[in-house]
Length: 144
Image (tube, rainbow, N blue to C red; front, side):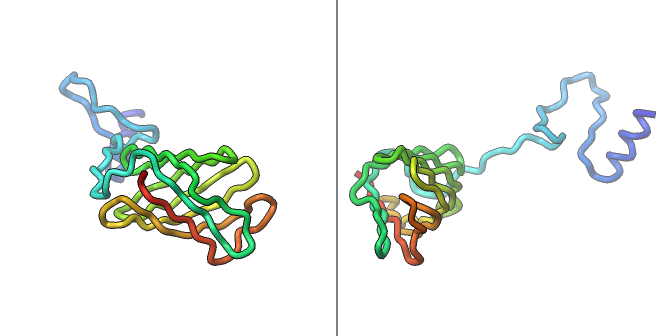
């Protein structure tokens, strides 16, 4: 019965392979598909120390705040102070999109990376210091 079920799955293109050679099958990710292989990023190397500024009309933002960015594949993580700020995003080409969180706020952001990889500009939304981030709020940064 199991062999029949496996044959049906293979017929539907579900990626079930029969191993008749006795060799170990290739590693599989959860869900049965092949493990994802990270494509090398064509984006500039972004790891390192930055200085960032968040601004918006009537908003208590951050100016010239140290930011550390680490990139692994297409995953971007960052840390900044004050307010124990973190970012978690995905880079695609020259755009990073993701979420941010602080001790007194959270939301989303989109950054465009300069062609030389030394600056970013973008926008963010959410709540910060008990205030809604106003429309048109900006988030920019430069490599230290």
